[in-house]
Image (cartoon, rainbow, N blue to C red; front, side):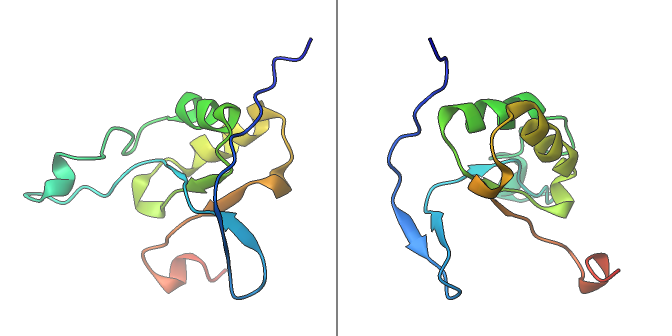
Amino acid sequence: MSSAVTPPSVPQVTLNDGHSIPVIGFGTGSSRRSGSLADLVGTANYGKDCTEHVLSALKAGYRYLDGAQQYRNSASIRDALKAWGGKREEVYILTKCRRLQDVMC
């Protein structure tokens, strides 16, 4: 008997390159800006290990993960993907970098 969850049907959007991604994703955090609404909403995972949250999202059927360099928890996405055991090519990961230099190695 399998304990795998069958992902719900989620609408997809087709990108310019022909790949399709889910329109609903799981966000791993939010930026913190002093004195802004961001300090009050969506900051639960900022700079924290959220591996279990991301793993739970993957098990629940999320296949679109939204992260950012400034959330400081990209290692949680990596660790959750390893623990999940699913196929990496089935997951779309969006990340945002602060500066172009951060992605140019």
